[in-house]
Image (cartoon, rainbow, N blue to C red; front, side):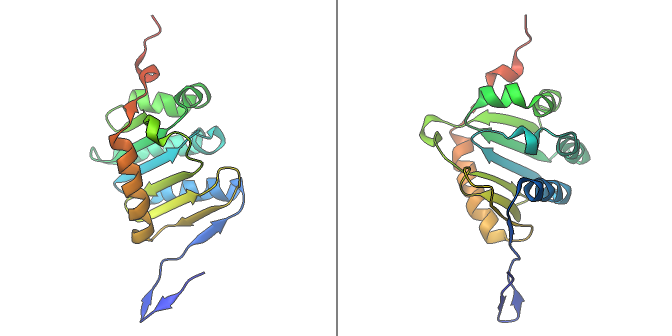
Length: 168
């Protein structure tokens, strides 16, 4: 699926057709990250994000440089906290670098998931009812479009309060 245009190589896109391929691509993108990882998911799927491998990669990523950030934006914060204990613990331990927020009312009901890495790579599941995802590890234009949408939602989002409760 690669196109050539006037001597320049167009970004290579991959169509991922099953959860194992999506999980492998998430791992690849997390390994490639150098500065920032942005995740939008109405429901944070624990089989993709709450794995020991992914949370270890995220922790290593933010530990490499004090400027590295992971921003996770969800609609269903109750589900996220309930079903993603590793992600929640990471957010609590590294709260300055790994942040979890809930979308505002105007963004509730979106039926897609996407991850943007370093303004260059991304994974985009356009319809949560279907397993297919489009991904690229080097498509600045596609990543920029998703990043702009993410930033607009992030700016209107709110912190997930349950992350900071002490249980007293």
